[in-house]
Length: 358
Image (cartoon, rainbow, N blue to C red; front, side):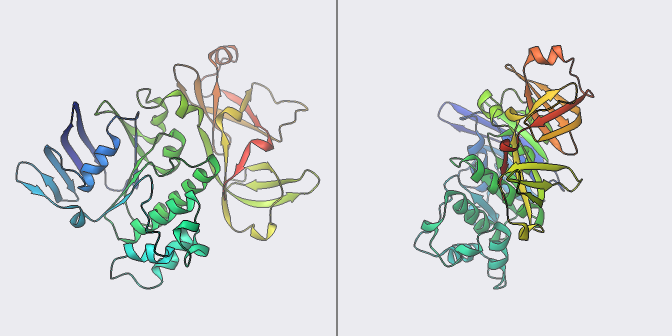
C-alpha cells in the first residue's frame, strides 16, 4: 500500500528511508533511538519537508518522485498527522476542533461518534484548555481521523504522559484503528506500546532501517530498544469487570478466554458490560518452577514460556497464561531454573501491581 525509498540529508545526518507497508497491515511501528531519523521519516512522507532523491508511493498514487519531478504538497496527500504536542486550537471548542478536521462529506453525527469512540463526549462543548494531557492527544487523533486520511502518522503521541494516562490513550488508539480502515505509522520508544497497537515493526538507527519484522520482534531490536524502554515493558490486557470482592476490597476482571485478574480497589458493577483494560508491568511479574504456597500475590497462573529475548542486562520472557504476559528475568535465575522456550512455569503478581486503564 505504501512504498518508501528515498534519501534526505540534514546537516551531517543522512536518512535512508526504505520500507513497505503491505496491504492489509493496519499499523506499522517505527522504533529507534532519539536522533535516529524517525520524525524526519514521517515529515518526508507527509510532505512537511521534501526528500533529496527517491520515491514515495501510496496505492499507485505517486506523492514524490525525484526522477519525474513529482512532489505533491501536504494538502493533496490526505495525511492525518498527529504531533507530540497535539497542536489544538484553544480558542475553539473540542467539537469545533474535531469538526475542523472533518471533510465536507462527513455527516453531522460523525463528530459525536468519533468523540464516543475516543471517550471524550463530555468535553465536546468545552475548550481543549480544560482537557487533560491524554484527552488533548485523543482530540488530536480524532481530528486527524475525521479528515478522512489515506494514511495516519503518529509521532510519539504518548510522550510526557504518566503511565496510566498513556495506557488509556493506547487502548483508545488501538480500538479506533480497529474500527476505522485507516493504515497508520506509529513512532514510539516503547516496545509494549508498539506490540499493543501494531502488527509489524521497523527499527531505525543512524538514519538507516536496521530491522523489519513481526511486531513481537521489537523486543529483539537491540539497536533500537534501550534499558529504559525495556524497564517500562508491560502487558496490556482487554478485560471486563465481573465481580467486586468487598472482603478483599478488590475488583475481579475477566479476559475473553476466561482468565481472571484480581486488582485492588472496588469498582462499579453496573459497568460490567463495558470493555476496559488493565496493565501489568513486566518488572512486577515473578516466575516459579512450582506452584507457590501461601503467598500474598492474588494472581497465580500456570503457563508456558512462549518467547525469550536476551538483552545486554536481562532476559525478557513472554509467558502464555491465556494471554501474553511479559516478565524480566536475570541471567542467573534463567540458568538456575533452566528456562527455555516451551518451559512450563507458574507466573504470579500482586493485585496492587494491576493498573486499571479504563
